[in-house]
Image (cartoon, rainbow, N blue to C red; front, side, top):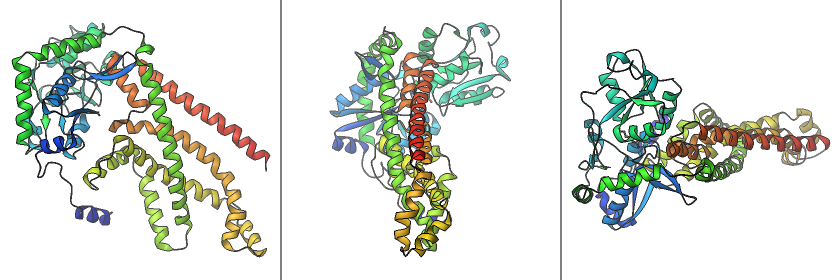
Length: 474
Ligand code: ARG
């Protein structure tokens, strides 16, 4: 551990904003990467238009205008709100346009443009509790929901310290908790609250007023990029002077109330998500098996160093959460290695690295389970060690290994949902997008659960048939 820390501290961290104005980087690339969290109608959400899904909302319109003003292409990078600042610091995105409010704490890390919108903060409650929850005092001992690492979280901590705070990653989750009564109130930005209220008739505003709430929304950009800051402010000035935000908002509202059945609007998301989940799981298991095989033989090796390396790797991976590994790969590849990999590639790499450790143990156990006498008998018949391994031990070991590999595949299908945190559009991620777009937090989860179940159940049936065949051949 000490060694890794020492090693890591020797590698110079690549700082995206160190020398160049970020404007240069954007111009050179011919593309601006705008980070946002598309769970925030009417600012940013996803909508299916003519069977094709696209990002819509006030921030998206603003981003389009800015890309046009800069003369570059727009690339929208969707991720959870609490990953945005980190992603910008490591250079994964150029700017954040995500309904973000400039705060003194954030200003220490990043720069902000002038505000492009003014907002209010509202408390939303269940309609039936409207008269019981009217003041700060009424909320003491009650549960309040906010989005993680937002100004709403800070506001709750400051102004309603006697309430219990639940900080959740995505806004639809918070609304779901409110609807089900797990929490009693939710703090939301005015326009977002309006959007949810119009779709959830059981919800209502509380009379509660905040004393000192964030009032504006701006674009965040890396520090020391005066040229980019100027250009962004020029665009914002135009937007404000021409009153464009109103138009943007109108367009967003129209998209929010698009007609059509649930499946015709969102079916595509689930199909695409299922495809991606299968793909990353296959990658994870196949490449993980290759790497895992190598690890297994390293661990069985008589060379103590080789053995130790494999042992440390396997123990480390099995002893840390996949969630942490996913973030390590996602941020580590940029911050430490200076690579510019897509979220998809990072997600797949993390799964491969993770699977390899588990599969190594499966293979090692499979080999060890073959009776010791088999090796002795083979050797006494005059076979060399490697001949005995190839001709006698491995064919028997494979019979132990394959079923366990099948189980691993099933596990990976389920676990792969974790890579949704870095924005890989697999099944879980797309289900969350639908939550945001449909204002219905529950149905998308239900569909995702059924889809995962169909995948794993089918696979386990196939494995059963396969296993029965193999036992016939015994
Ligand atoms: N305005 C709040 C903040 O700056 C919340 C923004 C949340 N944005 C989002 N896309 N979910 O912290």
